[in-house]
Image (cartoon, rainbow, N blue to C red; front, side):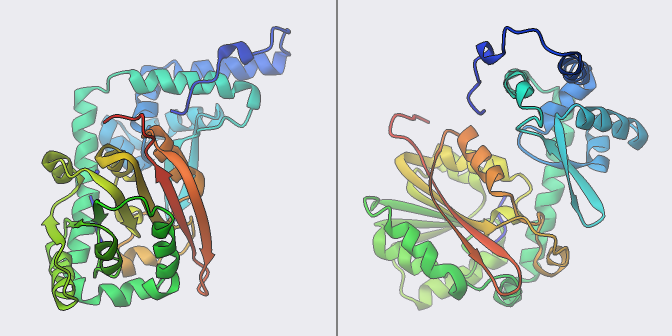
Length: 342
């Protein structure tokens, strides 16, 4: 199932006209000082849609680890970045809500302005190199383990454990009938349902061996209104594969840039179209990286919400399922408003 590719600004009038205390003034100064360094400003730009480890950021900015750690500490102390440990690696991401509620409006305006700024071309090139390395590792895993994919996936969650719930989510979008796109279809467990509801279904995967497994099962099940494509969301965008419904079923935790793939899905959706995301909630079971090829240890629900909202999607229904092995699955529905235009 491998697959590789702002919040609204609060009005600054919300800041009180009353004089602030010395502590509040110091917090404002710390935030502005932390963001006022050119390198730290670029770090915040790089962390716009993804999380990176210290060594990856050192590679992007071509500086020593001690220097990068110093800059990240300043950003963290100012409440601008948050950390998450996955095994022995600490990943840094932007802190979307400042811990000091009085500073949240200022921080959101700052992030919005940074997002509109250009990223240095050299940084962009090195960032793309890291993302390609992550993606290549994921594709290699699935090509090497295609025959054992179902066995590996069952270590976390079997389709039989949550498939009915996914199909019920699809049923709640009954007005959609023309085209559906499943990204990273695995063995194609969801495809029979999609093919029964939509006139045309596309299964897109960038792991050739996985796609062949999917093709064999689709043929055995007699699915005729389906095309299988080897590629990623860049290919889908180049082909103009606009869809009424897009499914990301246990895909994002294998994706090097989950925020970007959600943004691509938003572009591919027709107006009123629905993006269905099924994925793991954040967990600490590090063994899944080696056993199942996971790049991320799940996601906090608000992370998916933030990426979707940044892409112009509106949140719909949500459902959370607890598995016997301690994993939690989140089923999320996001809708592209009718007035949104790609």
